[in-house]
Amino acid sequence: MIKIAVCDDVMDISQSIKQIIEGRMADRGIQVVAFTSGQEIYRDAVKNRYDIILMDIELDGELGMEVTEKIKSIYPDVLIIFVTGAKGYERELLNFEPFRFITKPFSEEELLYAVGKAVRRVEGWEDKYFVFRENGIGHKKDLRDIIFFCSSSPFVEVVCRKEEARFRGKIDEVEAELAALSSDFLRPNKSFLVNRKYISGISAKEVTMMNDERISISRGYRKSFFDALDG
Image 1 (tube, rainbow, N blue to C red):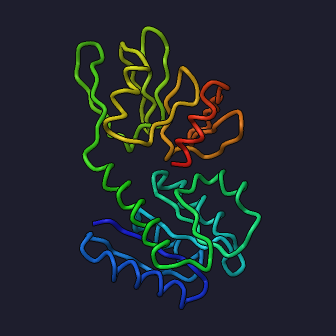
Image 2: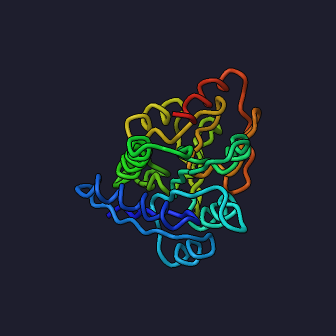
C-alpha cells in the first residue's frame, strides 16, 4: 500500500485534497492521511513512513520546507510535492529536491497528475536491485539504499546508506543497466551517477548528497543533468 500524507494549515484544503485523491485513485491501493500543522505531521512521520507528502509551503507559524527537511533526514527517499499560493520560493525550494510543485488555486486534474506521477515513481521502486560481483561473490543492492556510484578505474564504487562496496566495471555500463531499472540516477559528470532521492542541496556547479558528499556538475553534463532532474 502506498501511503500519502497531506499537510495544509487550512483544514478544508487538507481534507479536500485527501478526498480528491481517495475518490479518484481508490483502485490504486492508496492510503491518505491529512494534517493541519507541521508539528503534527512530523510527530506522525517519525512513527509512520510515508511514500509521498503534499506539503503547503507556508504553514501557520512555520515553513513547510523546514518540516520537509526534518522528515527527509529520516526518510531521504520520500517524495515531496510542494503546494503553495505564494511566489518567490522557487529557487529556495530546489535545495529540498521536490518531486513537483502545485500552485494554488489548482484544478483536480493538476493535483491528480502530480500525485499520479509520484505514485508511478514509488511503484517503480519495488523489487529493484543493482546486481554485481565483488571478489567473485554475487551481491545485490536495493536501489532505494544507493546514494551514488563513482568511477575509480578499473573499479566502480557503490556508496549506500549504511555501507560501501566496489566492483570491477565501467560507469557507462552501470548507467546503461540502471536506465532499464530506474530514472532516478542522474549523471552530473563523467565519473558519478547520483540518486536524486539523496540530493540535499544543489547549485549550478555542484550537487550535495545526504551523506555530505559534494559532487561537481561539469559543463558537458549540465544541461542533460538539469533536464533529467526536472523530468
